[in-house]
Image (cartoon, rainbow, N blue to C red):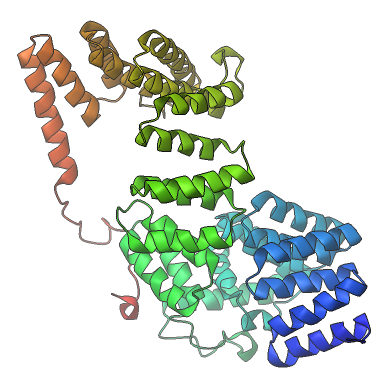
Length: 498
């Protein structure tokens, strides 16, 4: 173009300031960075790319800004936002931590880290960072109400005022204005039709908030966690207002992920997986959903794509084994399980320090044992079942609070014995399972079949009768309790009712 890089950057800033023309600004900033890849311009380019929905490109540019000047705190802010957009949790928090380390007097990294905390489901930590940002700045900046951070005020209002009263003492004089804002927001949420008119003008929230996407997100995700259908409906309204908000879509995935044949779940996951290929959490949810819906061809295509990118991804390797099982390819499936056991399973539970590794090893041995059993290699299968039982016993020994109830290893070994005709061994395993989890329907029904085959008809009838009673108890509609004592959670305001 013949223009100097500085002139291109100034023109880009003018386009953003006057017209919010981010796409045009991106082109100018890219030209400027080609000639002079300075950290300040690279980080500006990264932020503009985020506005254009180009998260992966933004992440690359933010990393280039860090490479150009690792001591620039604002570049670390840009990297944190880009990493958050791509669901790279550890990189996002590391970037904001570094920004604060470089300059602890700026409110932005605290504010951005708070938003990232909400993005990854950490409301308590977000509340603390939000208060820190206010105290560092000295007052809540008015411009914070003019862009998409409104949900942050809503979340933190509930978290701080309702759950963190200690901040009232710690904030002292320089936090009075911040706490006043939070009180105003809390009153608004409690009575959205009666916004407190006495609130100072500079503290008033701008625009009709009642059905904005942030307010709906707040109600659906934090106020309606137990009522998934209502939460999904509210999130649908929010997505109608902000269809490109990935956090909203992920929230609706969480609300719908246990439904079968749910078209919105598939659509949301498909969009998220297309935009956030780098997110392991989304990749896992997407392939897992396709498998659960029986969409085997598409599941295999996506699974192989993720494995091409990361051949060591253990969850995708497990999905690969499940796909091969459903395709009736047990020898190839066994190769996958062999690799997973070699890479991730321990040999001796006594040498395992992390309790999580005990359950991982147990499950891998169980899955390989099932595959070996389908191949008719009973001796090897029994060896893996025995190994899984050892890890299960180690889990129970470390369970100080008695939270573990399901003896998964003995349950599956018992069924293996039953299928092989070793009925006494099967009965012994199932008895042990039901000692720790007496209301397990499937094990009760399986034990009834074993007792029937052993000639114990009375015992079989008793198990089946107990299973029928439990199933009826779980499936019969429960009468909703009435009165405030029975339901301490306040209902939504009248104008929010469905």
